[in-house]
Length: 118
Image (cartoon, rainbow, N blue to C red; front, top):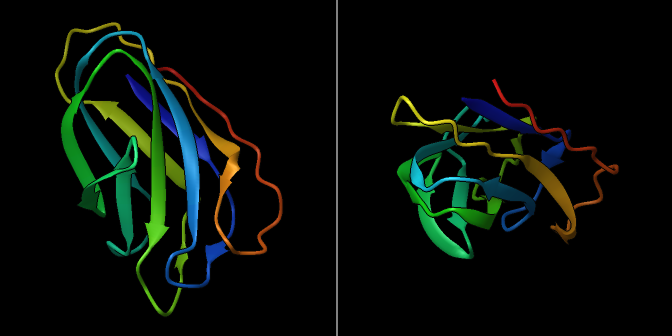
């Protein structure tokens, strides 16, 4: 199972962020990562810092918030949030999409979110 949310733009200042809502139908171990060229984003799960660049750990069933926060003075470009289930054999479904209420200070254009299950 692979899920991604799509966004476009550069988080130009330290502290700029983008948030996603993720719905997990079953609990399991998941990996959260992005397509940022270097590990310049903090990953917060339900407002708790869990990693920088990528993170693997347990996610309970239900709706969760994932926030990516820029840590680079040079800015960070993120186009995809990628959430994959680390353990095989589950039919869990995750849907990630950007949340309007969870946008950072940057002046990026409006982003559209998509969730895909493979």
